[in-house]
Length: 196
Figure (cartoon, rainbow, N blue to C red):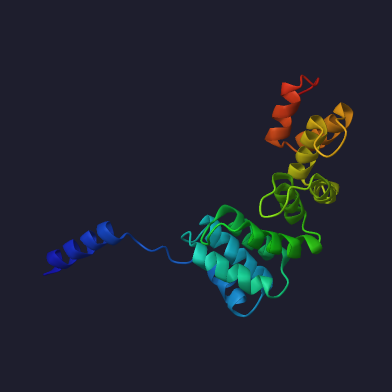
């Protein structure tokens, strides 16, 4: 009887897999999130989105992001916007992502500002508008966002919405490269800028 029970248990583990029990840190975070802590809710949303210490689950990610967003958490608003851009757990919807990026950007979230700039640059869900793209990139770049700094460097290098300006391009690319941002490092290397 015991052998048969062990065989059934072994087969069920092979067939169904095992579920990972929450670590004490995840349990503590979940308790805070359940009690309405917006930062804990945002962190749980992030963890479910990438599968960190929990099974990846976009539905759970969106649930926690929405709870935190309802309390004005800019990082959670950014998270929802990114889910709509990538189509993770939701249908890809650039207009919806713009809504969430705008909410987070209005609170000064640099990643949301950079994301808005990228949508205006590419015309995703909105008419292509280089002036608005540059505006949002500048706001994010001033906060040290390497992605936005690199975007500005590329814009000045190509002359998109601004006069082509090699020196301005190199300035922004260097700021991003000095943070170790690979696309900026690659661009400076391709331009044969000394030291890169």
